[in-house]
Image (cartoon, rainbow, N blue to C red):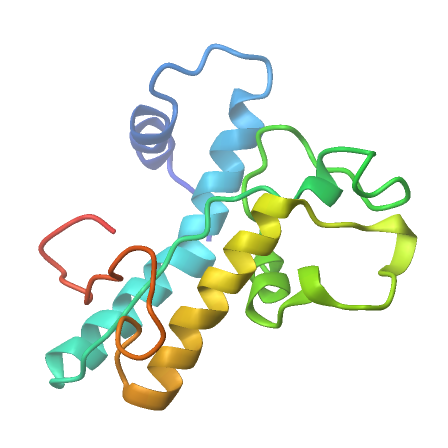
Length: 154
């Protein structure tokens, strides 16, 4: 199903605020597709579980893996546009502690100290949640992870 002219104008109004650069339509398409395929379904699922009485915790990853943006951290790794934030699947590296793997990663990929800190914190939240049902209970965390609340932005 295509986007109507009216829908396109609404999307431009929502997503292109302050965008004057040459790649603004690439960013527009990336945001529309990302929100349609990932964000909206995740919020819908969170709301369904929350409405059923479950405690729900959501996250939006906003880091850029250096291996995809800096040749020093990934000389043979696919490089992404500077405006590409955390891409689908980038969080998996943090979930499974890839920055701490003792073996070398393919294509010269490496992680920064900050990425190791992100991974350690994320694994702590996930481990706490798996063992207690609450990401903030168990091993001490840096910042309290708020419970999903549909009435505020996440």
